[in-house]
Image (tube, rainbow, N blue to C red):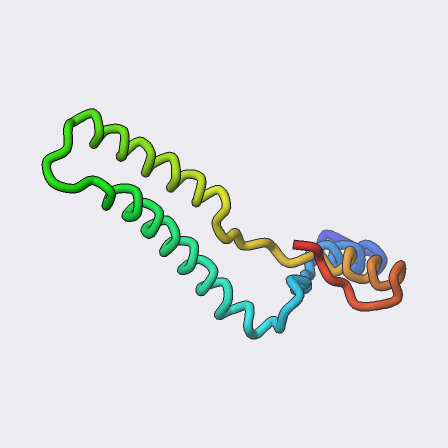
Length: 110
């Protein structure tokens, strides 16, 4: 049995828990595009690291190797900060409030 007794309380709790996809694309395509976005960002990290480390040729000095490794790590961290991030869906209450205010569909600004 529910601990919430009044229908109004149930409705408010439902509006907070239920969520809607407001990413701005088809909800079915989000399933695939989330994977592709993560894949692209991981590929970018590997590309950045390899590009920096591939500049070392032959028998370089130890200082050059350490400097290149440090530069690669810095660039990988910077790439991770700019990488794809999943965003949670928007609570239904916010979507409905936005529809009332604007009179049109809710589109989140990425």
